Length: 227
Ligand SMILES: *[C@@H]1O[C@H](CO)[C@@H](O)[C@H](O)[C@H]1NC(C)=O
Image (cartoon, rainbow, N blue to C red; front, side):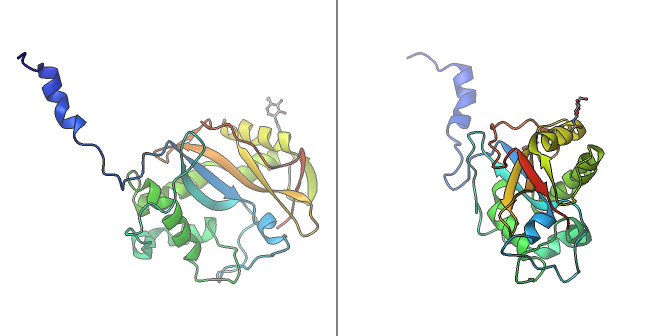
Protein backbone atom coordinates (compact mmCIF):
# COMPACT_ATOMS: atom_id res chain seq x y z
CA UNK A 1 0.00 0.00 0.00
CA UNK A 2 1.28 3.45 -0.86
CA UNK A 3 1.91 5.84 1.94
CA UNK A 4 -0.62 8.67 1.95
CA UNK A 5 1.10 11.83 0.88
CA UNK A 6 2.17 14.25 3.54
CA UNK A 7 -0.18 16.76 1.96
CA UNK A 8 -3.20 14.54 2.53
CA UNK A 9 -2.22 13.97 6.14
CA UNK A 10 -2.08 17.69 6.66
CA UNK A 11 -5.49 18.16 5.09
CA UNK A 12 -7.31 15.38 6.95
CA UNK A 13 -8.08 17.37 10.11
CA UNK A 14 -9.58 20.13 7.96
CA UNK A 15 -11.81 17.70 6.08
CA UNK A 16 -13.27 16.31 9.28
CA UNK A 17 -13.87 19.55 11.09
CA UNK A 18 -16.98 20.62 9.19
CA UNK A 19 -18.98 23.29 11.02
CA UNK A 20 -21.90 22.07 13.09
CA UNK A 21 -25.22 22.17 11.28
CA UNK A 22 -26.75 24.73 13.67
CA UNK A 23 -24.27 27.39 12.55
CA UNK A 24 -25.78 29.66 9.90
CA UNK A 25 -23.64 29.69 6.76
CA UNK A 26 -21.43 32.72 6.42
CA UNK A 27 -23.20 35.76 5.07
CA UNK A 28 -21.63 37.76 2.25
CA UNK A 29 -22.35 41.41 2.98
CA UNK A 30 -24.56 43.75 4.98
CA UNK A 31 -27.33 46.04 3.88
CA UNK A 32 -27.04 49.21 5.93
CA UNK A 33 -30.54 50.64 5.86
CA UNK A 34 -31.33 54.26 6.66
CA UNK A 35 -34.83 55.70 6.86
CA UNK A 36 -36.37 59.12 6.43
CA UNK A 37 -38.52 59.81 9.54
CA UNK A 38 -40.90 62.07 7.60
CA UNK A 39 -41.89 59.09 5.44
CA UNK A 40 -42.38 56.86 8.46
CA UNK A 41 -44.67 59.38 10.11
CA UNK A 42 -46.89 60.69 7.30
CA UNK A 43 -48.38 57.32 6.34
CA UNK A 44 -51.93 56.19 7.17
CA UNK A 45 -50.47 54.36 10.18
CA UNK A 46 -48.74 57.48 11.52
CA UNK A 47 -45.96 57.26 14.12
CA UNK A 48 -45.13 57.85 17.77
CA UNK A 49 -42.11 59.78 19.00
CA UNK A 50 -39.81 58.17 21.55
CA UNK A 51 -39.87 59.38 25.17
CA UNK A 52 -36.87 61.60 24.38
CA UNK A 53 -39.03 63.65 21.98
CA UNK A 54 -39.18 64.33 18.26
CA UNK A 55 -36.04 63.01 16.59
CA UNK A 56 -33.98 65.40 14.49
CA UNK A 57 -35.01 65.83 10.86
CA UNK A 58 -32.31 63.58 9.44
CA UNK A 59 -31.97 60.07 8.11
CA UNK A 60 -31.74 57.56 10.95
CA UNK A 61 -30.75 53.93 11.15
CA UNK A 62 -33.26 51.20 10.41
CA UNK A 63 -30.80 48.34 10.59
CA UNK A 64 -27.63 46.54 9.60
CA UNK A 65 -28.73 43.35 7.90
CA UNK A 66 -26.51 40.38 6.99
CA UNK A 67 -27.32 39.18 3.48
CA UNK A 68 -26.26 36.43 1.08
CA UNK A 69 -24.93 37.17 -2.39
CA UNK A 70 -27.88 35.25 -3.87
CA UNK A 71 -30.22 37.91 -2.45
CA UNK A 72 -31.61 35.85 0.41
CA UNK A 73 -30.81 36.53 4.05
CA UNK A 74 -30.59 34.71 7.36
CA UNK A 75 -32.72 35.74 10.33
CA UNK A 76 -33.14 34.93 14.02
CA UNK A 77 -29.90 32.94 14.09
CA UNK A 78 -29.27 32.57 17.82
CA UNK A 79 -32.04 32.69 20.38
CA UNK A 80 -29.48 32.09 23.15
CA UNK A 81 -27.73 35.38 22.44
CA UNK A 82 -30.33 37.69 23.98
CA UNK A 83 -30.24 41.45 23.58
CA UNK A 84 -28.44 42.87 26.60
CA UNK A 85 -28.67 46.63 27.07
CA UNK A 86 -25.83 46.60 29.61
CA UNK A 87 -23.37 45.62 26.85
CA UNK A 88 -24.11 48.80 24.90
CA UNK A 89 -24.63 51.28 27.74
CA UNK A 90 -21.89 53.55 26.39
CA UNK A 91 -23.65 53.70 22.99
CA UNK A 92 -27.14 54.56 24.29
CA UNK A 93 -26.89 58.29 23.78
CA UNK A 94 -25.79 57.88 20.15
CA UNK A 95 -28.40 55.19 19.57
CA UNK A 96 -31.13 57.51 20.85
CA UNK A 97 -29.98 60.20 18.40
CA UNK A 98 -29.32 58.10 15.33
CA UNK A 99 -31.41 54.94 15.76
CA UNK A 100 -34.70 56.21 17.22
CA UNK A 101 -37.87 54.13 17.15
CA UNK A 102 -40.92 55.80 15.62
CA UNK A 103 -43.27 52.84 16.02
CA UNK A 104 -46.54 53.06 17.96
CA UNK A 105 -47.28 52.77 20.74
CA UNK A 106 -44.27 54.75 21.91
CA UNK A 107 -42.45 51.92 23.55
CA UNK A 108 -39.67 51.12 25.90
CA UNK A 109 -36.84 52.67 23.89
CA UNK A 110 -34.90 49.49 23.38
CA UNK A 111 -37.67 47.43 21.75
CA UNK A 112 -36.48 48.41 18.26
CA UNK A 113 -32.82 47.69 19.00
CA UNK A 114 -33.74 44.37 20.60
CA UNK A 115 -35.75 43.37 17.54
CA UNK A 116 -32.93 44.32 15.17
CA UNK A 117 -30.35 42.44 17.26
CA UNK A 118 -32.46 39.27 17.52
CA UNK A 119 -33.58 39.16 13.90
CA UNK A 120 -30.43 40.40 12.13
CA UNK A 121 -27.54 40.97 14.56
CA UNK A 122 -27.45 37.38 15.80
CA UNK A 123 -26.75 36.31 12.20
CA UNK A 124 -23.45 38.19 12.14
CA UNK A 125 -22.33 37.37 15.68
CA UNK A 126 -19.40 35.36 14.30
CA UNK A 127 -17.97 38.73 13.16
CA UNK A 128 -19.53 41.33 15.46
CA UNK A 129 -20.62 40.88 19.07
CA UNK A 130 -23.45 43.12 20.36
CA UNK A 131 -21.25 46.07 21.16
CA UNK A 132 -19.38 45.81 17.86
CA UNK A 133 -22.64 45.39 15.92
CA UNK A 134 -24.30 48.53 17.25
CA UNK A 135 -20.97 50.38 17.11
CA UNK A 136 -20.51 49.43 13.44
CA UNK A 137 -23.94 50.78 12.54
CA UNK A 138 -23.25 54.06 14.33
CA UNK A 139 -19.86 54.42 12.61
CA UNK A 140 -21.41 53.81 9.21
CA UNK A 141 -24.11 56.37 9.96
CA UNK A 142 -21.40 58.92 10.80
CA UNK A 143 -19.60 58.17 7.50
CA UNK A 144 -22.65 58.70 5.32
CA UNK A 145 -24.36 62.07 5.36
CA UNK A 146 -27.32 61.43 3.09
CA UNK A 147 -29.24 64.59 3.89
CA UNK A 148 -26.22 66.76 3.09
CA UNK A 149 -25.57 64.83 -0.12
CA UNK A 150 -29.14 65.37 -1.25
CA UNK A 151 -29.29 69.02 -0.21
CA UNK A 152 -26.04 69.72 -2.07
CA UNK A 153 -27.83 68.48 -5.18
CA UNK A 154 -30.86 70.70 -4.51
CA UNK A 155 -32.98 67.81 -3.21
CA UNK A 156 -34.70 68.97 -0.03
CA UNK A 157 -37.28 67.51 2.34
CA UNK A 158 -39.88 70.08 1.37
CA UNK A 159 -42.72 67.88 0.20
CA UNK A 160 -41.67 68.35 -3.42
CA UNK A 161 -41.31 65.72 -6.12
CA UNK A 162 -37.81 64.67 -7.16
CA UNK A 163 -36.36 62.34 -9.73
CA UNK A 164 -35.33 58.96 -8.25
CA UNK A 165 -32.39 58.90 -10.67
CA UNK A 166 -31.20 62.28 -9.32
CA UNK A 167 -31.52 61.03 -5.74
CA UNK A 168 -29.41 57.96 -6.56
CA UNK A 169 -26.92 60.06 -8.48
CA UNK A 170 -26.50 62.54 -5.61
CA UNK A 171 -25.89 59.70 -3.15
CA UNK A 172 -23.47 57.99 -5.53
CA UNK A 173 -21.60 61.26 -6.05
CA UNK A 174 -21.24 61.75 -2.30
CA UNK A 175 -20.51 58.19 -1.13
CA UNK A 176 -18.97 56.66 -4.26
CA UNK A 177 -21.50 53.83 -4.22
CA UNK A 178 -24.89 53.10 -5.72
CA UNK A 179 -27.75 53.16 -3.20
CA UNK A 180 -30.89 51.06 -3.29
CA UNK A 181 -33.92 53.31 -2.78
CA UNK A 182 -37.07 52.13 -1.04
CA UNK A 183 -40.41 53.89 -1.21
CA UNK A 184 -43.68 53.79 0.70
CA UNK A 185 -46.88 55.80 0.40
CA UNK A 186 -47.99 58.85 2.35
CA UNK A 187 -51.55 59.17 3.73
CA UNK A 188 -52.76 60.36 0.32
CA UNK A 189 -51.19 57.43 -1.52
CA UNK A 190 -48.26 59.38 -3.03
CA UNK A 191 -45.04 57.40 -3.40
CA UNK A 192 -42.24 58.85 -1.32
CA UNK A 193 -38.58 58.24 -0.47
CA UNK A 194 -38.61 56.08 2.66
CA UNK A 195 -35.38 54.08 2.83
CA UNK A 196 -31.88 54.17 1.43
CA UNK A 197 -29.85 50.95 1.61
CA UNK A 198 -26.11 50.87 1.08
CA UNK A 199 -24.05 47.69 0.80
CA UNK A 200 -21.28 47.14 3.33
CA UNK A 201 -18.51 44.52 3.50
CA UNK A 202 -19.00 41.49 5.79
CA UNK A 203 -16.87 43.09 8.51
CA UNK A 204 -19.32 45.99 8.76
CA UNK A 205 -16.56 48.47 8.03
CA UNK A 206 -16.82 50.00 4.57
CA UNK A 207 -19.21 50.59 1.73
CA UNK A 208 -18.99 48.28 -1.29
CA UNK A 209 -20.82 47.98 -4.60
CA UNK A 210 -23.87 45.78 -3.97
CA UNK A 211 -23.21 42.14 -4.91
CA UNK A 212 -26.93 41.79 -5.68
CA UNK A 213 -28.61 43.76 -8.43
CA UNK A 214 -31.15 45.77 -6.55
CA UNK A 215 -34.63 46.45 -7.77
CA UNK A 216 -36.04 49.64 -6.31
CA UNK A 217 -39.77 49.91 -5.67
CA UNK A 218 -39.71 53.67 -6.29
CA UNK A 219 -41.37 55.28 -9.30
CA UNK A 220 -39.32 57.68 -11.44
CA UNK A 221 -40.49 60.67 -9.41
CA UNK A 222 -40.92 60.56 -5.65
CA UNK A 223 -41.98 62.87 -2.89
CA UNK A 224 -39.43 63.90 -0.26
CA UNK A 225 -41.69 64.89 2.64
CA UNK A 226 -40.96 67.25 5.46
CA UNK A 227 -40.41 66.03 9.00
C1 LIG B 1 -23.25 63.70 -10.02
O1 LIG B 1 -22.03 63.97 -10.66
C2 LIG B 1 -22.13 64.04 -12.07
C3 LIG B 1 -20.71 64.18 -12.63
O2 LIG B 1 -20.03 65.22 -11.99
C4 LIG B 1 -23.02 65.21 -12.46
O3 LIG B 1 -23.15 65.30 -13.86
C5 LIG B 1 -24.40 64.97 -11.83
O4 LIG B 1 -25.23 66.08 -12.08
C6 LIG B 1 -24.26 64.77 -10.33
N1 LIG B 1 -25.58 64.40 -9.81
C7 LIG B 1 -26.29 65.18 -9.03
C8 LIG B 1 -27.66 64.71 -8.66
O5 LIG B 1 -25.89 66.25 -8.59
